[in-house]
Length: 214
Image (tube, rainbow, N blue to C red; front, side, top):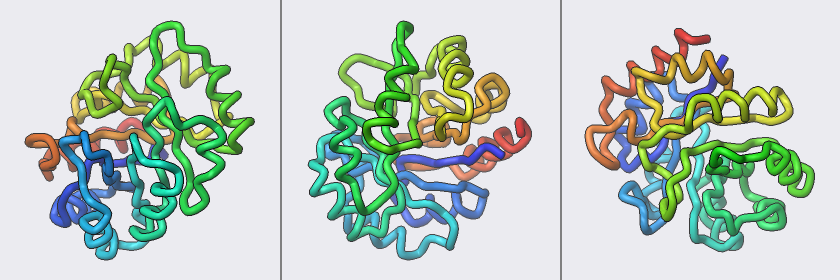
């Protein structure tokens, strides 16, 4: 069954709505440049009230590995999503307080050998694929080109926990799941009223669409 992460959580109400709707994981963005940014204190207050078995994930762009470990420990994060190209295998190995999800933003000539090499050097097995847009690290609301996504996920197969992100919403996610068969899908802007404010009905529709696809 495809797992579901609702990303860009900024309030307890949105966290509760997403959890009740069936989200497996919630994402908290700690990048100061994000329109969905939260402080460690804000995230901690929300995470403390999450039900069991909902994975709290931190999104990091410009933090050092020492800062990431400290925030993961303080907030009780279970996963750390590394969005910058500056986070290489050595940095990933330095994250000791949470499981690492390394983000790739593939262009048309992307080689999946990069993923396998990163996995071998870092010991990691979880990778998220987001749409590429120059100058923007993520949350663009744009989708990975369908044939590119299909190729990447087909070539990787079951060799890693591959997560699909980028422009997913309740209208397109079922087809995306059927085409790529990802370990998980991730949505932020696709389930929002505006940046940082979730729409409960969109969340429910998104999760129902994923479940319908198997």
